[in-house]
Length: 193
Image 1: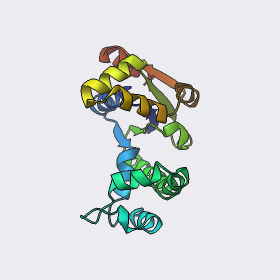
Image 2 (image 1 turned 90 degrees about the vertical axis):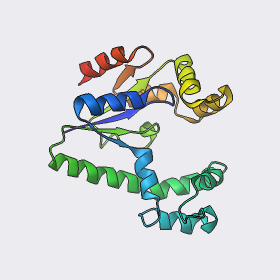
Image 3 (image 1 turned 45 degrees about the horizontal axis):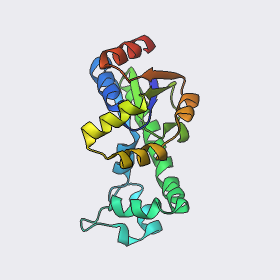
Image 4 (image 1 turned 45 degrees about the vertical axis):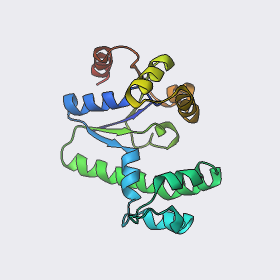
């Protein structure tokens, strides 16, 4: 089984690449943000530790984490964000390692891990290859305005909060330019695989 890590900034078109890998190459796609959300649900591994660390005021009326309240707390305070990450990231990585082992036993040929912060999360030892999905900034901005209705200000903040293009390029062995047509992107993927 080949394990590929896919990363790139917001609006670069990772979702289209993931959908193509699933449909055309029967890839199992694991999005680390979704794994983290699931592990933070009530009854799951991270939930109790997060509540113990940040208090019951981060719970919603349904007894689940109120993600917006938690975000308000951690994104104002780098130390608190670091504490949250020390609770969540090791559990996510453990879950991914176990899932890769399960899928390998099932005979899966291609396993894809996606995260915008993959270059800083230490997945190089898990992935056989790291791919950077690149798109020119004007293209990214247009996509986010069209698909998500974001303002220029919000887009600028989001881009500024992510790793730099240089960091993506340095941490990944391959780059796919997704600035043009999807057909051009598919051709690059085919060449890599």
